[in-house]
Length: 322
Image (cartoon, rainbow, N blue to C red; front, side, top):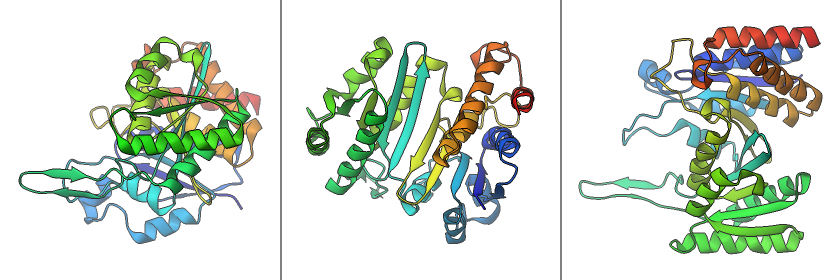
């Protein structure tokens, strides 16, 4: 039996993930769905945001649907997202951004870089170690190349090699892998790339970059489609996979029935494609398009519908097609 772990997390995760879960349950009632509670809310209640047993539970799933977690700016609080990515070795973060005349796939290295987790905080200085390894770079480059081959066959390497020696290392390894694979490639400084994507998004296909640059670049790119409430992501490893909206826990709007569930729904569609159900994935994407085209939209994209009302509309459309 296919088992799906459901992690709502914190904030608006409690609102958008139930919408996505309901859509999955309609398309696949035969799947087993089981909750795993992690996050800041759990830390407030128990003093433990994520236990070893929670990681073990996630490893029993065929895929994980993940909401969002709050990471407070406290020096003794470990990022739950980073811990899960490392524990499950989810080294490739795939962030598609699709709109009128463009279809980007940002492939972000997901387990090292500036998010290495190797940090020290003292009274006069704080340091974070930026780690870029040959193994990590080769495998993210190869993942990006596989994506490029399935798409337009164009690869862009985003880096800051004019300033950072670690990015010289990253860029050169990505170029080596692209040459070996026979893939068309170019490379750009990440700051110039961020601007050019906004000005000429149709010029790009697959973009591979390091952890923090990929994080920022995908947020910047979300402007092209209406904001973070619309952008999904997949975290893929050799054995495990986790799917989550790009947006955070948004505590300022949590509990107000105003969060946009589209990113969570699109993450669920990516989950279905990963499990081999391309038809179900396409049905869910089509339902999102139908609902948005009908004028039902949440406030962040110019509408008046609440999270639940948008979700109800999605279920109605999926039900009619079922």
